[in-house]
Image (cartoon, rainbow, N blue to C red):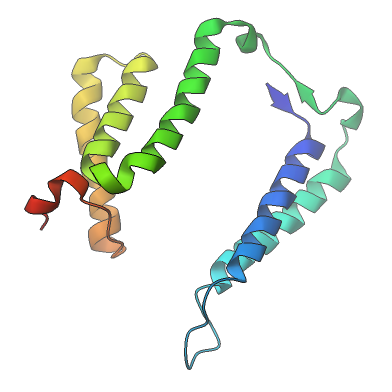
Length: 155
């Protein structure tokens, strides 16, 4: 499936506008002129500018807004696409209750095996990637991730 530059630009512009509008709801930092909304606002403004540029600069506008490739006619590829979308939604919904470790490992292993990775490689890789991501967020970035079912063993 191929999106025209014009449609991609409209989508980027809308996403940037949504980000900028959402940052208006962030509380200000007392005693500082720079608050938590600064960087998301800059990213949103960049998306708006980039999206507007894509809409204006689309040279292939006569080709239509959307064109489907051959993979769209293959049921297996449609199922893989749907699985990725559904898995992300389920991941977001169950993450707080189940926890990052369990949810991420199952999520990654399921997608890797479904997309063709052999289980003997997918399972250890899912665990290693989950641990690496947790380390990056928890230790380096100081962002707490939900423990969920493993709350009793949280370090």
